[in-house]
Image (cartoon, rainbow, N blue to C red; front, side, top):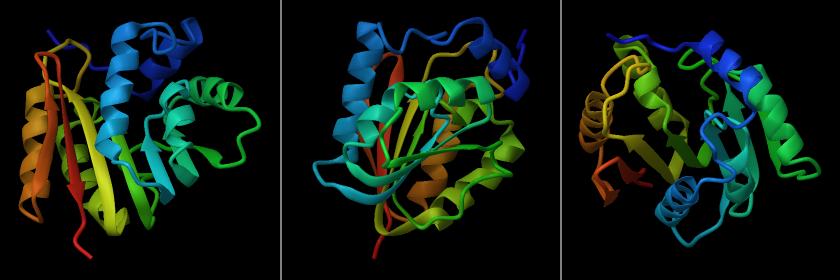
Length: 193
């Protein structure tokens, strides 16, 4: 039976443990970040957006390839940890955002949606996908990293989130699968100029 986690659940998770998924210490998490960064490509971006920045571990690395990076999360405690982790980095702005309602407008040259889309209810995911596309600048890239294994606190099965996301974006322009493992899938989409 699913016990769907919402913004309050994430807040409680980060209040109990500032690194609930061991982003800072897990070799698996470090490898996933490397795969994600490779999917971003070998270029630098003007404006970047990171959805669900959590405690800012990935944010730190994305700031290296973005002149300006907006990192958003629905958990205030996670944002506080992310700010501490990235203190002094003037490239990064943090903002509280509950998706899809608070999706920033853009335009962004890079958008990263890592391990978040399956936490949205199906109707919220359906609302967010066109907002992501609209927020992407011409020539910009969106990188999706999503688990493919099922787990109890997701609002929809991860494979359903992957399928819905890739179907929506593939209808607009080609979507490239960067890496598929037994546990997660990384795909990139570039908006035609």
